[in-house]
Image 1 (cartoon, one colour):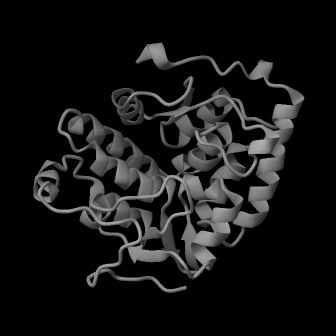
Image 2 (image 1 turned 90 degrees about the vertical axis):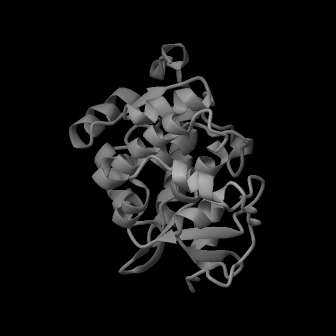
Length: 263
């Protein structure tokens, strides 16, 4: 695993790269107000993400370690599944170091540091969500070699990346793929087109997803506590066996048993 860990080399970032971070940050800070779960913005403020452009991983880790025991580690890009799961299980969140170019401000194919750090790290300050991420990593390690990683990938996609949550103030987002995207932040909670379905673990594990456009379906959790309770068993082997002979659902499919959330 150590072969995949690198130095962030924060001193090598250019002023234009720091300016890109500030541009993205200011844009998201404005659009997220009233659309993201409040604890996310609490994490952004507590971690001091906007202070001087691209954050130093060491500074973020110092705060996270005190709060939840997590740290941010630098990786060269996407890492193998076993490395990714082990890092999460050890409370290490892997982040790339590069930041998008101006012409990529609205879309890029692979995650950059803004997606990884701004999108993911603030919620690691929340003990319940941080535990969910660690348990996800442990579940992934158990699933290696079981021909069921696509089930876990869907769980990650529909929660960590594109999850919605109910709050007393209404529907809010928390998924990193949404909170790091200006357009999808608005779309996911305000546009009537997508399906918004109450979270069900087996339903999620059978549902395909889009990687080339806004999501056609979002799953909504009542709280982070309920998400944690639904998944903390870690060993999903009986569920994998139960789902193995069953067909998958299309990304836009709505079932009679689905509990829809209306906006």
